[in-house]
Length: 152
Image (cartoon, rainbow, N blue to C red; front, top):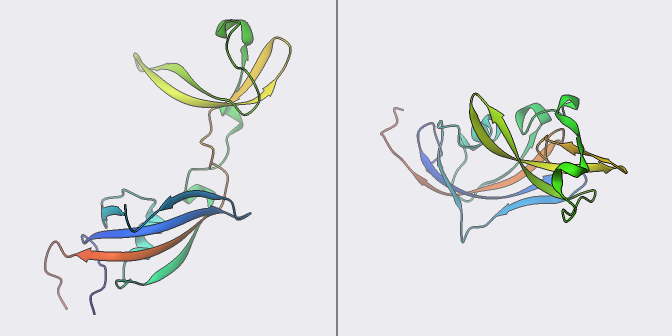
């Protein structure tokens, strides 16, 4: 029986859920995630869980916030003046904006969620929407392509 090991190229499917059961991502067998174990394309805890799995094996993997998208940071909440967006902007709680930030001399587009609206200001949250959440991945290993011989 072939088992997944470091440096193997694998195909996986999974459903990602929050602790309350809300699904945040589905990767299907028809369009699987293909990655090489050890290349850090997915969170390390999830990647380590793949090692030792056999084709068709299913595993539930829990990631703490610091293993997924990080803890929620209060310093990533910013109050902005509504007038800087113009009169036609849809500035409602829950709206995701694409804002420009300058860092190291370069402008970057960053998503920010409006979490509060006031008469003249809005509060935007630059945290990733999944930050601060425990994440649960129901992952199934679909295929293994060994990239180099493994020693016994």
